[in-house]
Image 1 (cartoon, one colour):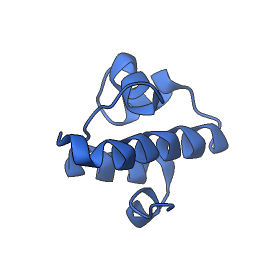
Image 2: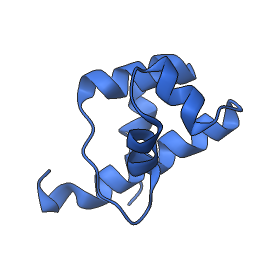
Image 3: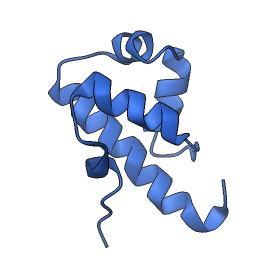
Length: 77
């Protein structure tokens, strides 16, 4: 991950957390749906960890959460 995009990756992680909780899923349940580990989901969502996510994984998460993928890529100023 390029350091210049750190803020955007953090926002993606926070949005994943928001929509996951909105759907009533645990990190473990989401991880199972997208074939990742709960630790991986935890790292994506953690506000103090910058973790890159591939587009394939982001698409999988969007499908699992029934959220249009663009919602994760619309950034606040």
